[in-house]
Length: 458
Image 1 (cartoon, rainbow, N blue to C red):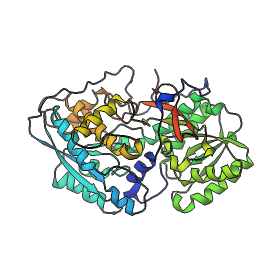
Image 2 (image 1 turned 135 degrees about the horizontal axis):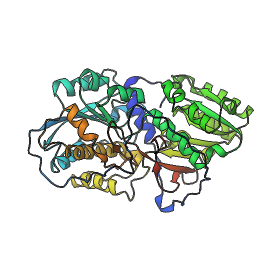
Image 3 (image 1 turned 90 degrees about the vertical axis):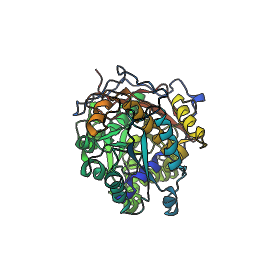
Image 4 (image 1 turned 120 degrees about the horizontal axis):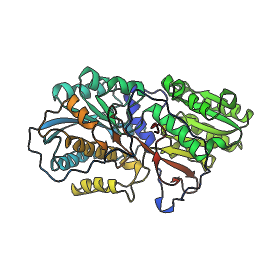
């Protein structure tokens, strides 16, 4: 959901946007202090059958059982964080990715591997500031090493075709992109996060549930010019969902940034702010995940423009307090499928056990450990899916996909829900509702997690 940047940086910058310093103090969560609304949205049927997370069977974690079959190679591309820091990206991620992979693979192989096959990891460091690095990493894993699967936590976001199409290799990915990309690559692509279309639906539906759209006055929309048109114009696009809530084009003022936000965001944001003020906008959807929101909120603060904000994974900004960390967004409404804290999480405790057992640091916060949490999720889920396959069966795209679609609810330390079902290898079935506390510089969850609004309700 970022503005246009070179394709070889998209994945890493998306991770960076998701992982800036923030937190959620669960010890101080109110029961639910947000205003409630009776408004809701109805999601149109899609080509992907969505499993019912309430009815799906929860997969147990496999017990100890040494994998003794023929080893199977799994590719693990990971980002060269130091190269990105040297290129000027303000990242704080831990840099022990290869050690994480080794620790997780050791755990996996002691718990059955994949269908009894021990995992033979192929870690590949990818210098994403090098425009040739993605292709080289893809060819090393798929052609040179002949990996059966690729586990990706952000390197290939938005650009998986070399792996899944050109070289017919299944990929477990953190960020699946848009619905159209996902459907085109199914069943070679699976992931625990929502597509852009789904995240947009969750943003509007979650905002409606909290009463954001009941706030009187005009709506301001900041639109990302890089989004596929379906995110906004499709049957479950932003406009169709707003129309269900009685909000038409007469009720909002929209500004769309160019797909080169680094060049034009400041100018467009200034124009948007002037138009919002002139139209007496009282609420704003943050939909670009770029400097545009930062400029509107920061300049608005100085000019006395302080609307209600609706922020979510749709724009990759809810975890990014460096973009919107000022008093202008105090009380902002937030909708996210990503856990904002690991404290007290039973799932995160398993990852900590795996890491600390190998002499690595435990997970502390999303700003440092986001990538580590996604690595842990992917490996544990692979083992759970492998346990559903025929013992010592050949691992192919078809056999893995068939087992995955029987999996139901899977392990997750990083997202609220991952549920696979028939015709569906995309998780992200639950979200949390949040409000931003400027004093604590943290998002406060409002009540319990809910079934994600993008999941069709029976």
